[in-house]
Image (cartoon, rainbow, N blue to C red):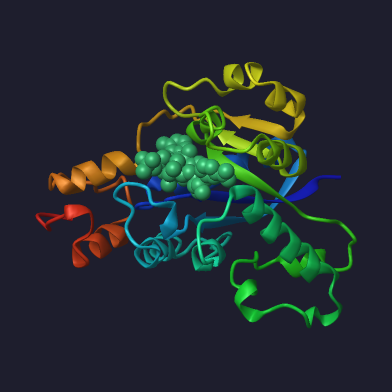
Length: 248
Ligand SMILES: Nc1ncnc2c1ncn2[C@@H]1O[C@H](COP(=O)(O)OP(=O)(O)OP(=O)(O)O)[C@@H](O)[C@H]1O
Ligand SMILES: O=C(O)c1ccc[n+]([C@@H]2O[C@H](COP(=O)([O-])O)[C@@H](O)[C@H]2O)c1
């Protein structure tokens, strides 16, 4: 029997690129074909403004751009829980919060204890799992750069890495010039929990990143087909990233 899982991607999404959306599709496709997991849904959790990364536009804009990007997408939902907290929250807590809410919902009688706001990011078909006594695991979906950031001294707590990989698990999408398999080999904690890490190879290599999109926008270069048209229009309308509307 397949283990039901939900894929949660965290990050800045500054702005959303087509690669963020593709990441969910190739992960779901690969996991279905491998047969171990059943992907119940996907969640995007944009980072809090207090994360304070250079050039980060407000969470309000980033949430709006994700909402626009997800129009017509039936299985990936936006969660604003992280951005509504008082300050930046560590990824371990974000995974735990969403997993606890989902499993509490599945166990609760008539779902009386669940706040309506929390339902917005839950997969539409979640009630199928009510009464099955089958817990749902929320896994962290990320690119290989996020995995490699585990090795940045002082950035992640060892306990958190152990909990994220041991209790949730990782689905890692390969990125240009990165070797996640070697990175795992070099880490004792990651090697210990290797069975909980799935590497998905993006064979159609690309170097799309939000950094390059912001750079192009600043220089008034076209970003069409790299991010959704509707997001480009939003960026121009709100003059984000130093963009000036020369063309779509
Ligand atoms: N081209 C890509 N290939 C694989 N994963 C990607 C790609 N772009 C983004 N991701 C993943 O999407 C998640 C959210 O990414 P994030 O918002 O940090 O995007 P980014 O493009 O890496 O941003 P920035 O360039 O601003 O650092 C991360 O796990 C990141 O690894
Ligand atoms: O939980 C942690 O300790 C932790 C440490 C560093 C980064 N993160 C998360 O990882 C994501 C990094 O995004 P970025 O754009 O800086 O690559 C973002 O969602 C952060 O909240 C999380």
